[in-house]
Image 1 (cartoon, rainbow, N blue to C red):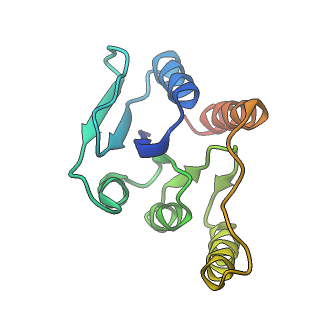
Image 2 (cartoon, helix red, strand yellow; image 1 turned 180 degrees about the vertical axis):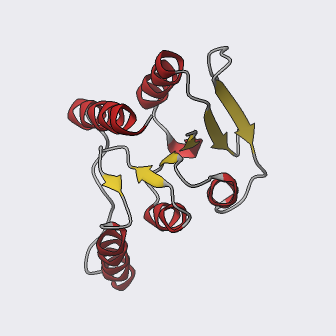
Length: 148
């Protein structure tokens, strides 16, 4: 198993949690972004910089991940792509996307996007807080314990 991180908008505290997990479990973890990232030196933590542009990091992850990998992303369409490839996806709030639930999450995301485009609602989800980061860390540990 390898962990892939959609790192363009990955909060620093989440990045730190992922790096600690990579070291502790000796799992290769690749942070993919279209900008340089500051990561600790490690045999298990890697950065991959992709070209600037819409969905460049997402496209790279979708093509690079393999069955059994874990992808960390808030992007539900990317999560759907990687789940289709046999990987799992974990969002920053600790929700695990799998083949059993990704269709419902994608439908909900598309519905909300439609409401935003018509002006019926505005904005997106609330900023990540301590509770979200703790839920993410717990979900990551639970997933890695069960699958690594």
